[in-house]
Image (cartoon, rainbow, N blue to C red; front, side, top):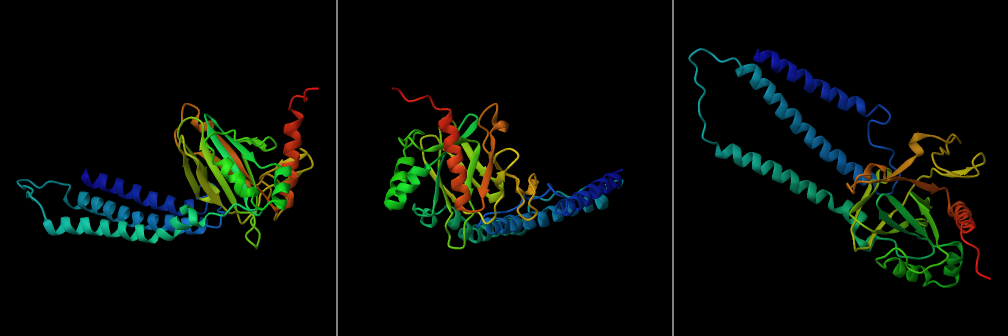
Length: 315
């Protein structure tokens, strides 16, 4: 009977390994398309940890199956020996995991430094796309400097830095009347060969803890009540174009085929921290334009749409 269960466990392990291998070749079963400048480094860390854990999973499960098969059937009159401990073995299985954790902690420093150290963040200037993202139950509110504000920046080099200081005010409304607003949609443009187009986000929350998660960028950052947390990224691909049918900008655009609706070019924004009963509904999209000119066209379009809903000025 014990050999039967050993065979069952063995088959399950083999099927798990087979599913693991197949998943990499089935669309939607593996990591989503990676489109950020630091995403490859994050993926390398993921695969390193994955292979380490896979090796020890297979090793321990193989030992389990072997011992069930070899020693599962009790022999008449046989009494199992009682082992109080094995100091050498205990030292080994303490040192080996500790050494692996130290190795991982050292190898991840460079990637963590690139993504999280503020010294590597883009400094606010006319080439940087600054955005305020405010989380709340259960949506993302996005705020952009308006077209007129960006024109003022061309005349005043200190303008982007002043906008950053206003954006770092801990509350959502910080006094720029002509800013452009959107909900559940982060728009930016693809970084060009000169490095223009890096995105600097000022992340806030109006209520509870949320987590700003862009899986296609391998980027995640908690939004903590009472704090304004800077987040940056740069995208090396684009997925958004003007659709003549809907008369607006639409994501899911595969510029290689010229077709809309490609799932690999629909890039999600999610909350990765449980924040209440509608946490699973708190999602949005990442819209990346091919260049700044196309982004500015969308910005003008969005501002006109928002102003069309504003009440008429008092006489």
